[in-house]
Length: 396
Ligand SMILES: Cc1cc2nc3c(=O)[nH]c(=O)nc-3n(C[C@H](O)[C@H](O)[C@H](O)COP(=O)(O)OP(=O)(O)OC[C@H]3O[C@@H](n4cnc5c(N)ncnc54)[C@H](O)[C@@H]3O)c2cc1C
Image (cartoon, helix red, strand yellow):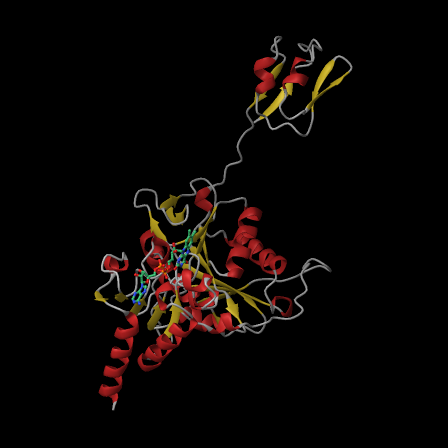
């Protein structure tokens, strides 16, 4: 919508100039002129006593939805290794594709990554779009956005899924803005509406207190970034084959504005909570960093990894890389042992899909017991050493 002065009716009274909340109207001689600051709010239309200002509805640009088909998964790779979230997205993508009745594809960018296509086929991709070029060796916003945006324009997928990793969260919005479409960030659930086959994207909002289900009815592709660790991984079918499509890659001088000087790997990247089968997690009840030593002893015996609640991280006892929950990592191990963790909703959001939850807490009314399969009410400094002793006895 825009606002327009009807010059023949304008009497030069300046009422609109004074009424405009954005100072967007000026006088040119005896005629009002609308400037670039206009937001089309329409206040001036109502204020003009001579009906000399009108609102004009602009014709909405519409997308021909029928041109778009298929589901794409952005196959994020680092050091030529497919990220675990990609396997989760392929698992979920397969289900969605079956419901829509469409093809599942993966799009992978990098340098010397030709053989990754085979792995993606084995995890369920019917087609793999490969952009292989030295300029794509390291992730850059400009490089990846250009290549994938061009591919979207050419091949027109109806859904594009990316992992909500640092890279996915950077790339997704850039692609969505260029494609003039909708993006839902950090989804935890995806479903296909049986009536119109559009994707319903659910994500936690307002600190996890509300689950918002979002649809993108009129624009394509429908885009989502998906929280790692939430969806089930695709099963591997060894030797499964598909079709490879090479994407053209050409950049003009200076088109990629980022120069990657160095990639520094922190301890953070070495903590793999999402892949762990057993997690021994500690909270404020551990009383201090020494308490986590006890958890390490337990997790060592179980072949698991140690994690923490935000309260323990905020206290400086553990690095944020170990944090489970809404603002940490979402985990789905076979066994999650919550020690001295009260079970706040923001913590539960990150571990409730664990296959078995064992809680150790001295307060019998702690909310963690509501999601626990097994609960031990007691002092963890007595309970955990007793468990360790028992494990040692069994192993000796
Ligand atoms: C926007 C937002 C995002 C958040 N994101 C996260 C997140 O990602 N992850 C997260 O964990 N939290 C998150 N939080 C914080 C969350 O609300 C809780 O504050 C936090 O999870 C509490 O951690 P806790 O259970 O370790 O500590 P507490 O709530 O203090 O609980 C400590 C527990 O230890 C028990 N205990 C004490 N001593 C012993 C003992 N000797 N033996 C046995 N049990 C004992 C107590 O009974 C108590 O239940 C978030 C909060 C907000 C507002």
